Image (cartoon, rainbow, N blue to C red; front, side):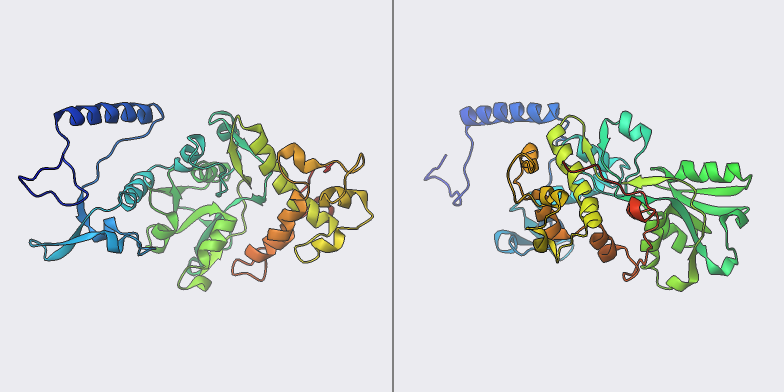
Length: 358
């Protein structure tokens, strides 16, 4: 409603009784729909601190936000131009206190594939109705401690304080290991939303345990990394790989065979640098991989996934084969410096093995 009797700024409108009722009814219907899908309703304030209103990675909102001086604090506050930054911060604060957020996001469709350090276990597979796809990294839980303790094995840590997260598989693995070897220890349970690494560095425990790849990664961030040692024990099996929801077979097939293609390319000697050299190769297996030919002996495998015929070679052209990805991110020439170990092809004594691409 506009009126000549009082001033209304441009872009502002009053809802009179009839329109206000319609608005509230429509709002109620929308809220009910979102509620059915487990969304939660929040109302951020229109006035808020600039840290909450502005996107720190972009200046797009700066010109759209009206700044006002808060006389009590003598600092600037703003009138909300976009609700997104506020919602993002609220979502972070709420979700960081929930250990299973990664699974929740996958199950409710927020994400389509989970590729964090998530161990493939019976309970996660069956109880959470998640589909674990080919393992991309065979890991195992280990321990890190200070060299000043003078130990070379976790079996020497009698009476030690050990930090571990209250969620995930670490707690059970640690309990099983020390019970098996009849070693007494003092458990230090790290609250959800905090990190075992930080508690360890703060001196709240003598060592902490997590996947050995994670320990190697963490140690690179320590101020005095040489003062810490990753102990030799591997106390669990931690197969890590992509995870998808049950019920979308086509998508799970695409993710599954994307992983297998990385293994197959390494086995065939196809890399991101030489992939185009294989286009006219005489080996039938390579021709099926490249997807450049048609016919009975060279079916379009990509079509069965809803992809183009050169899908496999396209993947390698973009990211390389498994060996290239490993060496680029984890290998001896990186800060992590991890040997491939079990993460070699089966032909080299490892566990990586792909079914035939035919």
